[in-house]
Each structure stands twice: as C-alpha cells, then as structure tokens.
Length: 455
Image (cartoon, rainbow, N blue to C red):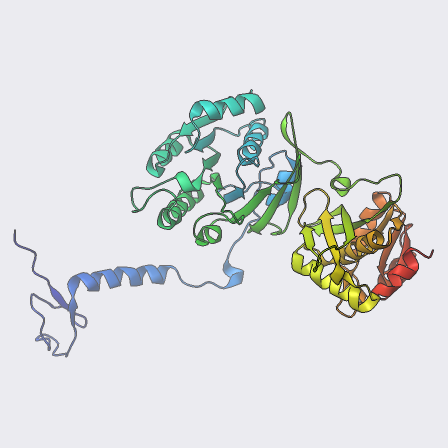
C-alpha cells in the first residue's frame, strides 16, 4: 500500500509543492516552505490562541458560587457552606473509619430535598447487595438512590449519561480504571487519568462528585500527589483512637476555609454531629487531680477544650524514658529542656509520660503551658483545681507568650464553666475586665510554680 506523499507549502504565497525546495518559484523567498500537515496544525492552534485572549479583570463577569446544603451542619461547615455543583471532593481516611457511612448519611439527607433527582453510588469494592444493606440500615427510604458495582470508567460514564444524577460517589479512585491508559488499577498513571476524566465529565454536567481515596500507612492518600492538586476539595475523615468520635478535616478547599473541621459521633443511627464541641474531648471533673490540666486548642474556626495528662516517675535504670501520645516527641523534649534549665528540675533521671485524652493529635503551641503544668503537678504530687486551664506558648528562655485567637479561646472557656485561666501577662492585662473568668498572668515558667501552688 502506497503512502501519501508529503506536501509542502510556502508560508508567504501559499504555493504547494511535493518536494521541499530552498527557494519559492512564485514569490522568490528563501527557506519559506514548511510541511503542509504541520502548517495546518500550527494554524489551527494559533486560531485557538487568538480566541482565548487575556481579559481585564473588570471585563470578566462572575457570580457567587451556588451551594446546596446537605442538612448536616458539620459536613456543610467543612465544605464551606454546602456542596458546590460540578465540584470534585476527595475523601480520605483509614480503613473502617466510616467514609462510606458518612457519604451514605449525606445521601440520606440530600434525598429529603425536593427536586434533588437521582443520587448514584458507584462501588468498585463492595457488591450491590452489600451497599444496599448499608443504605437500608442507614437510609431506608431512599427512592432516588442508585447503586452500581463497576470498575471501568467508560461504563460508569454511560450510567451517568443515562441517569443524569445530581451527586455521584466513586468508591474508590484506586479501584477505578480507564481503557485509555495503560497500567493496573491504583497505579499512578491510572489514578491520574481517571481523576482527569472525572473532573472534565462532572464539571461539564454540573454534577457533584465525591471520590473516596485509600490511605497509606503514614496516613496520606495513596497515589500521586497530583491527585490532591487536581480536585477542588480534599478532606480527611479521622477516628482511630478517638473512640466514638470522628473528625472531618479539610486540608484543601477552593470554596472555603482549608483548615475547617467537623465533629461527629458514631451511634446506632450512623453518624451525628456533635452538639457541644467545646466539651467533646474533656469533661469538668468535680475533684482536683494531680498530673492533669486543661487547655484549649483551635481547630479551624472551632475551639476545643482538651485534657492533658502527665506522669513523672523516678527512673530505676540508666536513662529516663520519654513516651508521648498526642504530642510530638520532639516538642516534649524541648519543653522538658526548658523546665530543666529555667526551673532546675533534673528530668534526666525520670521517666516522663504524656497523654492527650481522647486520642487527639495536638500541634497547637498554646498547649505548652498546660503540658508543663501537668508534668510539674505529677512530679511534686500536687493537685490542680478541676476548673483551671492553661493557655500559652513557651519560648526557649522560659517566657510565656499569648496564643492565637486568644479572645475566642477565653470566650469558649468561660462558656465551658472554667473559673481560672493561666495566660501570658500581656493577655491578662488586656482581657481582665472583659471576662468573668479569673485570669492569672505569668511572665515566665518559674512564675507558674509560684502562682499555681502558693495561692
């Protein structure tokens, strides 16, 4: 079979020839001939570029993003006020934490709305009977629920075209494949291509798509990091070690606060939002206790009251142990070094144990003062009043600094029923007349011992 002979065209006079020549016989220009196929492709791309010109910001019309409330306040809070039509939301979390349960509850609440239309749940791991059993238990009245067991993206799209759903769940992205890409399910190339095709399809049809993603052993969503860059919103559902409580945490959100959190509790109805988050992870005890202190941490726009437990024991071996749960070990070592330097406490011959009650992981530096108070209390076997809290960040020289959003913390602490709060001296001076809570200001860590146990 003969192949088609290539043609060349002069870029000046458009004369066509079947063999490249250095000089055009028509316009007499030199080196003006180019392959005809390449010339037409460049011409087409240039015309597209001319259509997509940069515009001045004042000439661009924009409308506020319309949202659909799911009826779940904690879920809407994390998404920035509700789901956005045409958005792609990536939901990650440990196995068994409740990702599928959460989205089933979302479907249940969406189905109550008028004119919502079909809601499609695509599972590549569970059979339709397994998914149906969960829906019948958590959302038994779902007349608009559709379930599909499928791994191939092209067949999923055919069902999307047939049903025209308002919301789609893909469970999970690592089990979905497309014919247009080589590699097995879960490979980097497949995850990237499937996400790209999902994004184009759902945005073109205005369909909200929730994509469930597996996580690795270090807690990151499996697959290329590009996956998180492509989607509109990335949320993590956390719950290991939290007992019945669950935390939905946003780490990326193009339509809202990227650090917002939602609090849930697992019960017989599936998942329910927490009504009083300030006391979710710490209760107000009636009797004073040694080695225990309270503090507040900021999660998104939320203030949580947490309980810090410290235990200091005499070491019977050559070197003291350091065990920390909920706080980075390096942070504990730093605070111990400050206490040893500024308070003269030899921790090298002591075993130190630190625990954040409730299984929370705390990276808020304003908990430093509470950690030191709990350790000092345990070391000296002195009890701390059950309604006393500590808010302050510790410097290397032992100075106490104000935490972020301190006014919000004080307001929530007062609402929780606390009576005394140890804070930085500057904070006590500024807010002493603005709150009914007794604020005790301290300049440095040695002042803590003097003000806490000698009152």
